[in-house]
Length: 327
Image 1: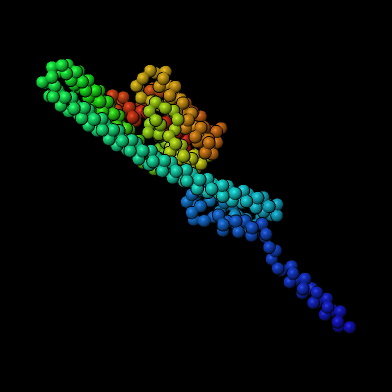
Image 2: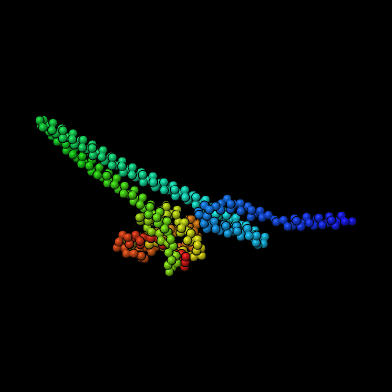
């Protein structure tokens, strides 16, 4: 008589135990495993914004809150943010490799220029010695021909030819020496410009103004008279992109400016091309093209006097304005 109630009690206890056992969230476990793989401190340094977004999305899912439909949406968002972090970190690694290769290429070019200069110097010295030897030979022949009037004219002609050859060799040697010196100066200038560019890239910052935040790119970011960004500058716009990402709802204006050297229409065209070049570089690296415009003002808005080289260098610039933004 008592067996049936005892059986019912046992089944009830078993069912209660099953109901109390927590249900595993397989999607959360999978995403947490992905996070352990890619959410490293190194990834945080390489892509801080993507790292923060992924961490925030995963924390919200791990909180256990929300209805099933909400949690499914949160899981999808967390997975997308993790994928963005993975791609951004991979891109940062590729960018670092490209920068390293560019640095090695510049070093090779600099060394090649130095070697070319040394070879030119050695060739000039060789020509000088050859000319000296011919001149000495002509002098020897002239002395031997003192007693031979019949050969004097021939010797003098040879001496004159040797002199002319020596003059030509000297002029050639001088020209090659000047070329070698020019190559050396160009190599030093290229090295100095590369160092200056790296220094300016390291100190890029947004300055508050009445129009918003202003980021200024100096003329060292471009070759003289050219509109294309230098390779090192084009691959290192991360600081600018970070500022833009902090103000996603603000319009961005890219404005090109020049000094007063040259015709007005040429300056205006150059400023417009440089502004467009910067805009295209930002868009190519992920900036939203719909919020960025590019305009050139030529020499019409100087920030320094054009009477000095320093003032003209300051006037040759591209300004990136995040309108209405405040740090």
